Amino acid sequence: MTGGGNPLGTLAWNFGLMSLFAIGGAAAAIPEIHRVAVELQHWMTDLQFADAFAIAQLSPGPNVLIVTLIGYHVAGIAGALVATLAMCGPTAALAYGVSRLLTRSSHSRWPAIIQAALVPLSIGLMSASGLILALTADRTLTAAIITALAALLAATTRLNPLWLLLAGGCLGIAGFI
Image 1 (spheres, one colour):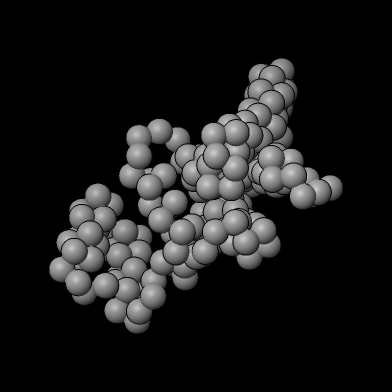
Image 2: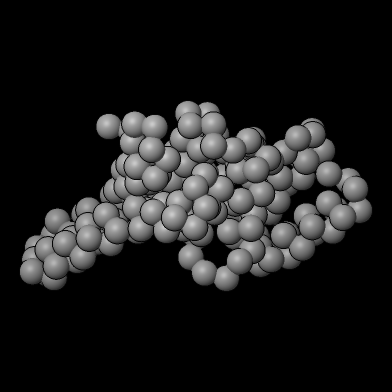
């Protein structure tokens, strides 16, 4: 099922499915969100997707705001509501069920094993998100090099990422990227 030509149904189906594997939040599902929104459904271009991601990250609120912006782009206010509810509803229900299960088995070893197993999965999904966004947003070799340097600095130092964002913004305003 894909929503069959109904944009609201398509939004609900796609984001409802994605919500179930978004371990680490909506940011972990960025590669799939990009694939569906840009490559599969052609709802937006790479540049529009990168802009929606930037707006979602700059705005106060949850990371899931990108889904709201995509839904709005596709079908206005109704699309924003459907996409947001589809992305949040199933995962909220799943989180509630899992938390009840973990509470019941607090003396068992398997909850800690599952949580430990989800950490590398979440890191892998977030890394894939970073790569997709870099490939989507970086249009020049200079931009790609700056992105790689920022990622290296973020990974190897205790530098607050806001300084890297500020430096990137200044380089963008100055016309280097």
